[in-house]
Amino acid sequence: MYAIQKEICIPITYRNFQICPRCTSLKILNLGNNEITTLNEGLFSNVNELRDLTISHNKITHISSNAFIGLGKLEYLDLSHNKIADIKDDAFVPVQALKDLNLGENDFPHLPTRGLGNLEHLKTFHNKNLQERIPANQLPNVQTLVLSYAYHCCDFTQNSKKQQKANVEISENVEWLKPDFSDTFNDSIMEDNGSDSISRGIEQHLKDQEIFYDNAIMHEYVVPDYVETEAQSDNEVVNIAPISCEPMPGPFLPCDELFGWWSLRCGVWIVFLLALLGNGIVLFVSISGRAKMDVPRFLICNLACADFCMGIYLGILAIVDASTLDFKAFANL
Image 1 (tube, rainbow, N blue to C red):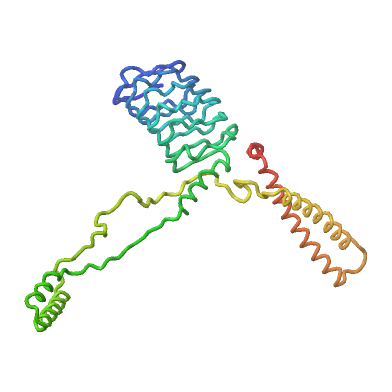
Image 2 (image 1 turned 45 degrees about the vertical axis):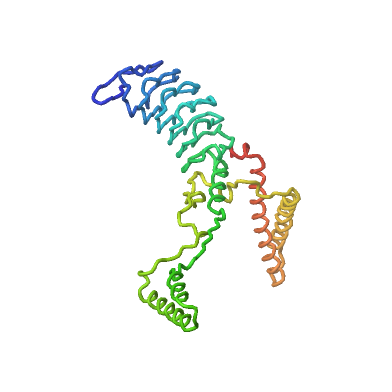
């Protein structure tokens, strides 16, 4: 196998391989489709500029704490189609710039989230042992997820809906700006103390108002002191894109128990069993009887058939509810 840096081909051994010192400026490295079983500690310590790393389709069984030391600028990591059964809690701490992580087709039961705060794309599909939920609050920037089970998406989709439905209060105050006639008005009035001068001052003030409305640009506006003239950015309204998660929860892949109360759950089971048993007997006797199918018997058969179908519907709900009582058991269905 060969890793390509510019125009130089550098040989790398399969087992216990080492990245050569000449690869310090390497940006993309593909080690896929080999027989790599172990990632040695400090293996990538001399490729600090690496952005894209693919180690898929190998035989890696575990990820140690120091496997990715030196990859502080790594943005894409593909570890899919391996046999990873254990990932240390601080394995992803050195790759805090990581945005895209692919861990599909593996066997690990726990996904550590330390160091994944900037992650935007996560894939853990076809991993039957990963039955515990992934905490959504520890992946604040995630946008797309392809997970193992539908209930893994519940926390992410519910948080996305809460953010979209958050009440945003927007207030608006309108202040009509007025021209400053105080100097003109006061000067016209205060020229003389007589009533004639006051009348002339008012008349002149009204003429000034007419001039203002005819040519408003010639006057200055008075802005009240309590009106804010600068934009405030403390409370900004941010448009958050909805999170895409697969497989999506649905009617038969719910996020919570279908029936929240045990009394309701037991009642549905009783009605389900009685509806199937009682209406099944009525249909059997009515159809298989030798007597002529008259109108009353025909109506009874129709009612029994409708109740029998309703019993089947309640049975489906009861079975789905029973399946969601234990999510770990539900994951194996």
